[in-house]
Image: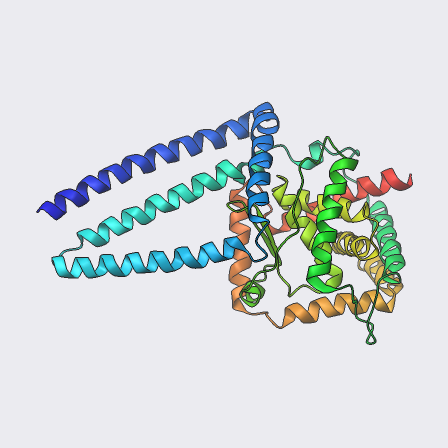
Amino acid sequence: MFLKRRVLRHILHSGIAIIAIAMVTAALITAVRVSEGFALRVYTPFSRTVSGWIGFLFSFTSFSAAEFILYTLTAALLLYFLLSLSASIRAHGGWPLLRWGFDLLLAAVIFVALFFALWGCNYFVPKLETRFPFRTGPQPEEVLFETAQWHLDQASLFAGQINRDETGAPDEGGFEALAPKAAEAVNALAARFPRLVKGAVSPPKRVVAYEALGYLGISGVYVPFTGECHVNTVSTEPFLPSTMCHELAHRLGFAPEEDANMIAYLACAESGDAIVRYSGELLAFNYCYSALSDPENRALLWARLPQTVRDDFAGSREAWERYEGPLQEVSASVNNTYLQAMSQPEGIKSYGRVVDMLIAYYLEKNL
């Protein structure tokens, strides 16, 4: 009887905490959604500052602190469950297990609340396109074709400037050499566009469980709880810098995928390093090429690709094909639902919305 009363009291306190935290979180999300001033002048600067300090704190570890914490918490949660199950069996009742369930629910609510408080509400601030320094808007297929062709020419130029091994594969030092270059490119972009990009970033980190991410089709992930950007080493060298810059853009508060893509491209385009420039042009060409609706235009562009660039695309496809399977389909479905819940109605297709901004950048640079 005493155990029952104690558990009921614990559940009551947990329930009150859950309701209070959920209400505060809902109020924060609503404030960011309805007030552009609060979103851009209060929340995003706060998120960038706090994320910067957290990221700086964990930048001193060569390994992923987020990955270590994940494994540790999972083990602790499993141990707590086993102890609660054992106590329920000894007590001939499910009260300890019920308390475990409410503790788990409270932990989940705290997790979600911290996610939105630290970074998640950046999904609801005005999109980058509305603040972009170059004019955006719908353009005809001809302009899209010209943009794709320009990025093709740029990619062809830088493809011949990077180091390659005896087989012709890019050889720029791997993850360890490219991670600092990506961070340097993003930090330089903050000086180039100070009103748009603010803050400083540390180099992204690799993950131990890269194969697990490969089977899930995940090329990178930003963890706001530790301020760490993670990039999957399944990606080949030509595509690593742009992927790194994409995750670093998330760290600076650019949560929507098309926004992170554009910041990644700008960082690569402003870099003085050939492999970083090449990676950015591959990213831009790929999205512009994919957006073309006329198959003849696609055929014309593909025919103009140098063999080295084709080989680099083929190398990337081969690297990821090894991990194809039902898990990738499930992961894509989950990611699609997540993005739709975060005010990105097009889901995973929102990655491609970067094309409008790429066209605007091309027109500004060339016309």
